[in-house]
Image (tube, rainbow, N blue to C red; front, side, top):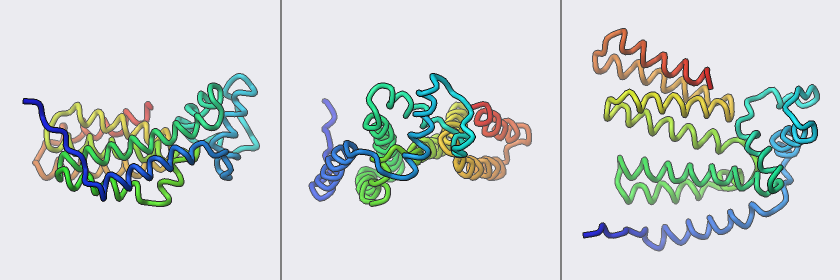
Length: 217
């Protein structure tokens, strides 16, 4: 028999639905935030004007990692700043999906529902989702990195650790503070090797994945 679909109770689903509706409305508001106008959209706009990526000496932020800003460049070319904001909002929504899936797998359905409600109830998170920032690119990839790391510990499959390294690389490419998450997971690999008495060679191979793959990306 087909599995019955479980819907969250009204006191959870209604606030989330209202918040999502407001997010989709607010993303249509013109961009007015300082960081967006001098950094996240300004650098892509300069690249578009020059028809290519080039050094911008008067915008120091152009020397940062720009994975999200490259997506904003596509957004500006195809639909203006509104599409760029929708791209960042998408990463925020995917972050919520990641939190829900991880919480449901390891803590149950009710914990997942409350986790999702708490996530979308943070005012600063909702404000940042509707702006063309790079923060939720960082958030999404870090959540995925932690999710893959936990799956690696529970299944002992090296492919999950490789996925964790990929997500760490994408997180650093979105914002350099992603190094903090990669560093914590690096320590986690060491602790896991000590706890399970894994040999030095195995631990070294695992650590090399978390170093080489992010550096390549």
